[in-house]
Length: 190
Image 1: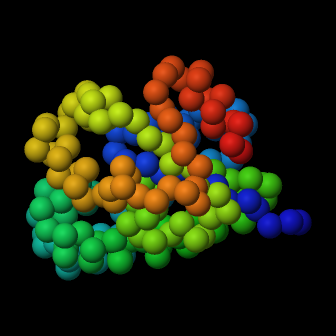
Image 2: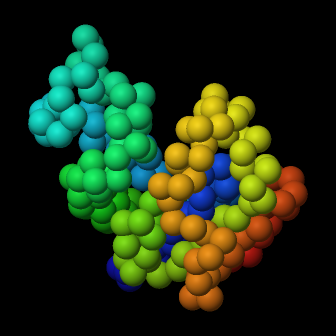
């Protein structure tokens, strides 16, 4: 069987990456979400032990699951701690992407990778789609998710500056209309 073509979807927080992935999945493509893979990794006992060492016992709650709010507070206010967490998680995420794609035996796999450039993973993909959206629409979407202005600023500042990123080697998808329009733009690029 020929090599699976790997396509990454990325963009700033609130740009519409998850929506884009769901629209692609609706169209019959094999998709993966790095956020879902991270959830799987976080549910493993051996990883919970590593997180306890990195963050302390307060990252765990009584039912042995991760206190994500506590982790978020810490990593978005401490770039060194965020980097340590990323070094712990990202290699496992990459391994899981390859494992799941190999098992799926598909021609094309589309993967939502929120921290693609921050993790320097862009070279792993045959094509990168960057979802862009105006700042006001992004902020509105994040407020609707329950984040406050301070949290939004922290998260935006922790990501690569997409406005100043050289996007020449990548495909930019403008999320500026309705879902149908976005879907048409995405499918055209696959």
